[in-house]
Amino acid sequence: MGAANKVPGVSGGIVAFVGGFYEEFINSLQKINAKAFKLLLNGKFKSFYRYINGTFLFLLIMGILISYFSVSRLLDYFLEQKELFVWAAFFGMILGSIYYIGKDFKNWTKRTIIAALIGLVIGISISFLSPAKENDNLFFIFLCGIISVSGMTLPGLSGSFILILLGNYVLLLVDSVNALYDTLAEMARGDFSFFQNKARVATLKVLVVFTAGSATGLVTLSHLLSYVLKHYKHITTAVILGFITGSLGVVWPWKKTIYKVDEGGSVSLDSNDREIVSNYERYLPDFGNSETWWAVFFILVGISTLLALDWYGKRRKQTV
Image 1 (cartoon, helix red, strand yellow):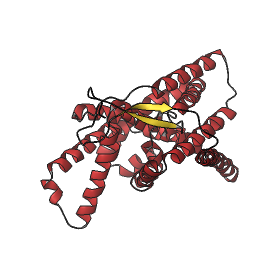
Image 2 (cartoon, rainbow, N blue to C red):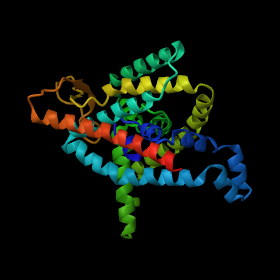
Image 3 (tube, rainbow, N blue to C red):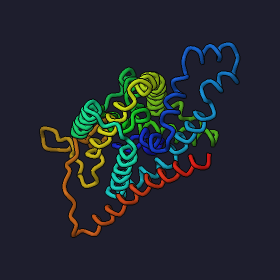
Image 4 (cartoon, one colour):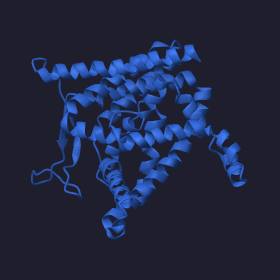
């Protein structure tokens, strides 16, 4: 989930959905409420831990953090060196997730079809929005945290892609994460000179506010989704299915980046002298190119990964 949340267009919620623990994830987060804090304040730590399904949440959050600082750094490298193949693999995974969610969904009615179409239209619409400029205002950063965490709670909605649209993907998921990684590495060597680095401290402050916003969004959204899943499960599944299908446009492998251009015709740069992304131009693959067939291969790898998860989930249910 941590690696998936880092990639624009891919939702960590899909991993939870396909892995078979999505509802447990939402229901566990929903238990972080007034009763839980009352148990904590009264010193009933074991009761608190059991009440919030602590073992599950601890293992899941640790897995997300570990992948965020390991697998996601590997993904950063491949996105820079072999971008087409990475997008192709995730495109295949989303195709596989559509099959996974759709194959067992037998509740197609007029209401669920309309819900799926609404999800499809929203997913497609988001795919073609243009990104905003970077904004490091701390209140806006907090809102970014609340919004971006939707990728973990809503399968098909990519939190990282939303951050691109808000203009803060690089600041929050690249610069701040790298700043934390570098700071921890320096502290491990006994070097605390980063306190004198105003730019580093400012970036770490941004990360703290973003994390607080994410935690707030994670808990509040889980309460809402727990209610929705309990009372409108079929409609919610139909919306998710439509949304995931619509999001295929975001991860279409064959695209080139369009950068913002200023009045003089030069590519616009952000405060860190990086080219500002405007949107993506999608095109059809050239099947006379060997690279295209490699991309098709990685699409099949992505689909196979989801089918393998499906097989593992069925096998686990049979052995339990």
